[in-house]
Length: 214
Image (cartoon, rainbow, N blue to C red):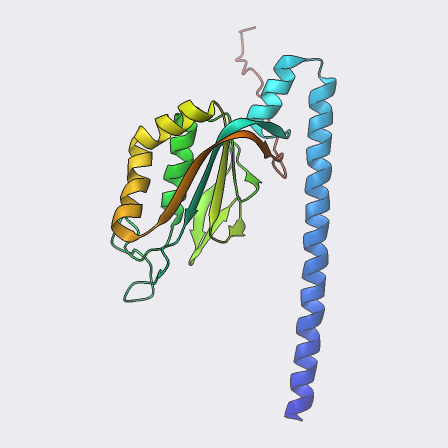
């Protein structure tokens, strides 16, 4: 009896897993359709170079060009804290693990240093992107990433690299490396290719009018 119930439970789990996989595939197809429609709308808007620039900055189109490749990885012997909660009381990687706050600082530092487009492990970032944690995992736009974290930033490669490394965020990353073993490597690249964001929500602002005003 127990064996039969176990077999039925396994069948149910397999069925639900298959259904979930199909839904995920459908979501990916819909996101790609939305992205394609957004890119088409930008092309048909008649904005020319301006529309292309807007699409690039919004993450709605693929981009390529020179820039910086930054790889950030956990320390070789990364571990969790005493209660299994990494870095509960510290702003640094005292466990040797890269945390969401670290990636937030890295990305913000690259933007501030002149990056024109940024991606993390192939996930294109936009003004609506969120980098957060779920347990030990780092999520970018709700998609879990695994180390090493490869950050690509399009811009003036040499200037971007120098400005980032001299910035407070670059110095923060260097402190993680020197004090807690976080592994980092930065290089200037001649041609980086960043994909379009999976889905970009288009919002249009309308002027607010009050009674008695035009």
